[in-house]
Length: 372
Image (cartoon, rainbow, N blue to C red; front, side, top):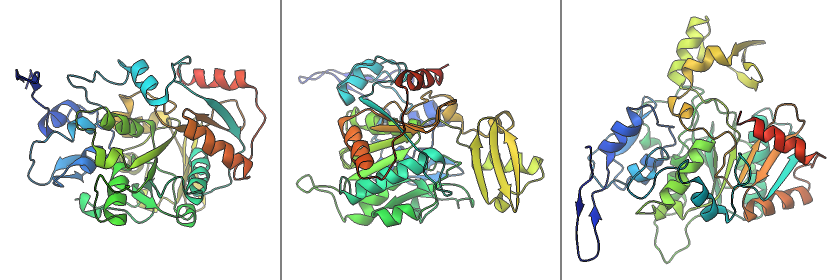
């Protein structure tokens, strides 16, 4: 479909909506999908599911177009994309104008790393902040990708590999602290939001307060929240549910199928993998008592393709973004919203995290360097 039809009416022009067919041709087949699963989560008739690491039709499509207008990689007649409309979007979201290449921010913190063998350093800090938010009842549930009990299993038509991250929810600090994070694959983050709605509440009515979800995931996934809110439908059932977002600085996320191929070529069995850690020059994988490092260059063919299309090194649209900056000690937290500043400051005051002294210019220069 090359051109969308427009029909004049007494109320103004009505523009033909794009549907799953457009999503398939423009995003999925074009290699722009980031496997956030927002398209699946918003489908009103559960006609979509993940098959072989790809969103596919698994039922009868009613051509509503909701999936297309929830995808962070699509554009339409009123939305030109995050890069093209960056200033307008950021001012609408955060009430601030961008002055730095890494986006708007209200406050920057640096904290000491958290000792957490079941999470990457950035995820470990986010885990502590999200657990603190649950404790203070700032939100009811945290949705993310990890290795706990998967939600909405019927949205997966092919079994997950042993280390393929799935959508998970946690509704108490203890539950969140006992889940393994440390993701290697994208993880279909938005299935967690759909799962929170369907497992924790029996219905959704505009007169009833919905369950409040804090969502965290890679930068590319966080964009789907705002794509939903800025679309013609607003996807209120999901977007109104998400009250807080957290992201970690960009790192490679891989296709499990392609990782298996690379491991096999190296004489390694991915199912025997026990642990891994991201390092400056590659990823170290643990098999038994031995560690084997594979360079990022060797692993590059396994990167989930959509993550090479959307460039967002610091999670520019999240309430808080967390990550490491080369050459700097400690973990950097960028608080972009007032809610983000409040959560981090209260967590520091409560001793949940330990603040580290830092030179702001050094941190700013380090963040700028992430953008080349």
